[in-house]
Length: 205
Image 1 (tube, rainbow, N blue to C red):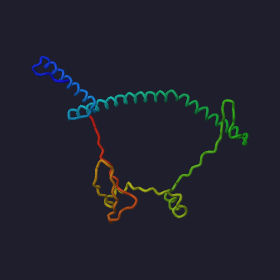
Image 2: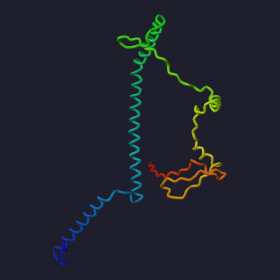
Image 3: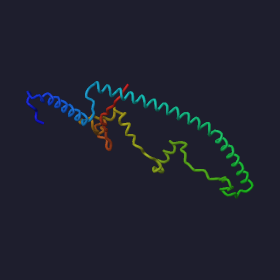
Image 4: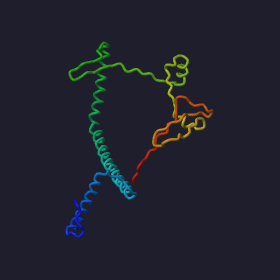
């Protein structure tokens, strides 16, 4: 659209229209630009939004937990009598089966009745270590395959008087690694110190 001459009576209308068109174009540009925080006031507003949202999450979790506690208590109360019945009748059925076995040692392992079975099964077998020190000493000499060695590399970090690590140069936003070096100057093979990237956090209050 060509601008009219300033002396033209239509010039004022054209100028107003141009300002409206420019404003509309600026608003369209703002709508297309991704939202971002540009100043401390905006950052403070976003922190307050987080605090409000976290308070709402806490409120919801509190209500949900109260409901869960109520339901758990209801379940415990509601199942107590049936559970007592199960224990009572199970005990008497097992006693009945034992008395049957006394009269008939060849009683089948599964004693079948129309309403169910009364069974007898061999218990599981497990190995317990009653004296670990004695067992380890024996296994070292007789069967090392019974022992498992687990590297405790985390202790390298705690023994700074024996093992050294320098902070590597480089971008702190990416993971970096350096060798583990003993005080003697020897590089400890097979391990390294890993420096994780810097972590950012937001805490609203």
